[in-house]
Amino acid sequence: MIRSSKSTLRFSRKGKLDTVRIFIEEYRNVVKQFVDMLWEQEKISNLLEKETTDRVDSWLSERMKQCAGKQASGIVRGTRKKQEKREWKIRELEKQGRLKQMRKLQRIYDQVKVSKPKIEQVQPELDARFVKLDLENGTSFDGWLTLSSIGNKIKIELPFKKTRHFNKMVK
Image (cartoon, rainbow, N blue to C red):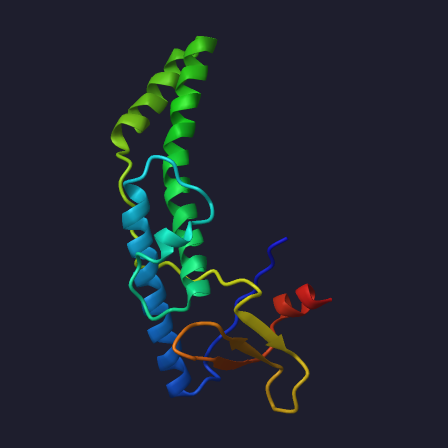
């Protein structure tokens, strides 16, 4: 089960925020490289092979590149899947004789050109390999979020305050 909660970075110092921005910018760059590579392939697996991840030039750790590759794979596969579902539904509507709905969906299908997804706003989807949550601390903050295994020996510790949504999830 995937659980997530949003928090603010307003309690972080400028240096930490700059490090987070640099990391996110590089992560997006890596995802873009993977999307460009995968877009040309016919069959795409969920997890990318090492030879594919090695073709990406980045200072991110191999783990982080693997994570970015998995996210890029999901983006590309999802983009293609939506159009495939429309195509399948058109055939089903035709078999059922529901021609009005079929023509309407066919117009949508014809108008939508499957194009390479834009990833300028993609956010890193990190798993337990990269994120550690510390709720037992002696500071004025409710907790600390530690991001590690990023690359270049970077480790980012971010303070946060709990939200109602966060408290519901922790119970």
